[in-house]
Image 1 (cartoon, rainbow, N blue to C red):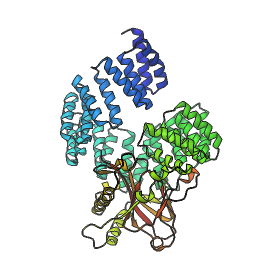
Image 2 (image 1 turned 120 degrees about the horizontal axis):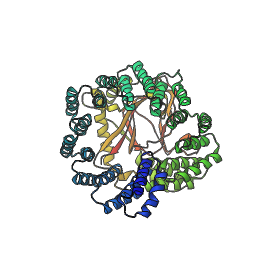
Image 3 (image 1 turned 60 degrees about the vertical axis):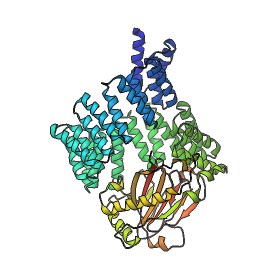
Length: 604
């Protein structure tokens, strides 16, 4: 290869690895004109486009590179990685298989093929691929983790645990292996054993951010809040530049120690690393959750003194300006953001929200349509587009938000062994009470005046909660069975042969507690199941404590009447599209209002 071309390619590789995509393309585009059909240039152009999120362009360059030189295992594998991310599973599998066919010694290819086969429930094929991987890398923590993951997907927790424990018996000082075991145990709600495994990994020098978060959660679930706080304190001391750890620590302290300054460690860390965008971003995210937008603007003026410029900070500025009623200034920042990064969804959707507040729903609707053209399943874009349609008087709003057909109240029956619905849900209330351990609402959630349980509720090995899950499954199946077939509708079209939980939790509201109006961006079907209700809600003639649908968040600054209000009843489950606005009307009582909520997604 020509020496100058080789040097330019290496420069481009460095820029791509550092995320400097504009600089990389500045090298690669003229190089592609100079050496048309060069497979390495085309491959790097594909990787640059992939990082930008331009998947059509990336796929074009991947396939052009392979057309120029079909025998590139790494290119097949990188194309497969992108196809897997886009849920084009069959094509991804074909590309992974081609990669290992071309290069049988390609360990990473076998590893990724095994994971994808496992995710598609081809457990035997996954095990065969994992054996090929292990044969190449020998018995390592990575190979043990791969086998454990395959067994987990197959529902064989004992085999997964045995695999890791067998590996650690042979290599007891492998820190990564202990961390993987801890993660497995945590997912299976073996919190005490998980904490011991994580502590072993930590003692062996493993200091991964996720490990600290998982260890803190394990202590929390074991009702050892003091240890959980100490772990997160140690985390930000050990990894002081990690904004996510600072965020988690501050959030945990907000919930568990509401009288303390939860931002103290972060405010101390930023002056020591004033150019760390991760720390500034965590700080602004936390302030945003508290509605402290004037403080965000003050913080941004300080950050800009250090010549920090990043889309993340500009977006925080635009949102803060909008929330503080500086509408024209916000519009200017949003417009500049779109010019700088025209393909990014978050600026477009935040701008759409601002535009509705500023009285321009037509332009907001067009931005949402742009996002949906690239990502048809974007729930936030559907929520905002529907709101824009409502403000425009467009009949498509009624098509998207069909409150009568899409909001489905259904009674959950008690399981065998309980003489009534009241007896069963009283038993559920008692078990859930034990899981509400915090003092304040989660900082980054929608509830106000109450508490929320931690983690996926139905992982808890409690017979009452597992019975509750079974009864919920039956009720959800009953509702979904009556859904219409409509391939052109973004909600109805997603129905499949089954569903999975993507999250489940419990909320306990006290007097004047409520949920702000919100939607769930990651779900398909969302819910509220009423476990316990104050007498005032049960027998009251008004709408206190009821759930309402169709009212946007107050921050959007638009006035829309509820499309439907549903009165809660103990044992009643209300199911609705995740993209639909919903919230709780405050109530007054000495008794709490307790719910279980969850999101489900269709099975592939």
